Length: 459
Image (tube, rainbow, N blue to C red):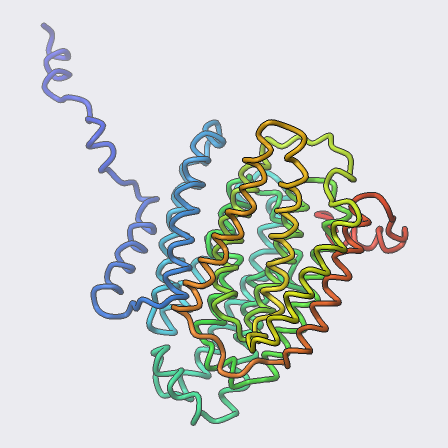
């Protein structure tokens, strides 16, 4: 036996266990985030709140699913390891943000999540489109970061503490000069992170990133603005003008995103436009003071939209446009049922959450209608019809649990009948949208062109 053979035998190769426990220099930032999260939980700088647990749980669940999906889809990508590290780091930073008891710690985690997401948007580094998307995202995230840090400084000076609980307790006696700017800056931070106008472009351009990145955005990143507003609810409630700003922009975003969905013919583009619309609904719900509904919207929409993005990678649709909408008179009938239910809700004294509950009811009734219309077509129709019923029951139960855990605003933003009027306008717009989507009506050419370019990646 030669000396070379002896040396090779004496020094065995690293076992799989050792390889699993070894770390490279690139893993150090992720390890640091994990240690910071553990330290925050150990020394009392982390606290369990309904909003924080919802955000952390959403991040953990979606990240695990995306990583499993990415192992297969990115198996030939030389930067798959870097993506996995950034995904884990994003989850850890999001959990730290959700559980932070200190406003400075929350702001630091907020900034880290933005840097990581910008890096993932530019994952395909040799693509000019990806680099441009990453730059646009970085700019929007920088605006959000600056607004949040400045707001935290105002609140810390006004409350003489950086503890979020202490800031909330000090709001009634805080000087208006600190409170009002902080409330508006918090709202701006949420608008930029949620990709609401005028910050929607970063989300539409992010479609240049791989599909797992688009799915991972819904793991508590793009929807973190709702969490931020609920976490600093006392500040927002004390600044009625800031709530009205959120309310107004939320309505605009909901209509803007829904309109772009009508003209996008690509699956991912349509899903991104839907996210803009849904984030508008979420912040609209927060502005109304229905925090429990907003948090459940954050979780449910995050899981559902991440699943849709992961499924979009292999979607090839040859269905005509009319197959993607409910035919008349179903939309009008659903709208009428929703309005009757909304009026009954007002009469029972529960009209404070009328708008978000009415919109959710419309979506669930639409799903139920699709299921029922499938019964006569196939043997599995009964199963298909049962799924929406189960979804309605699940949403009702989850919203009841969330309402028991999370208090809503003490005072609603607008009167019940004003919400009823807004719900009527939204439903009228939805009925018209269904007619356009089914091919019964066409958008004016000028409006179609404007919407197409507003949601176009190259715009």
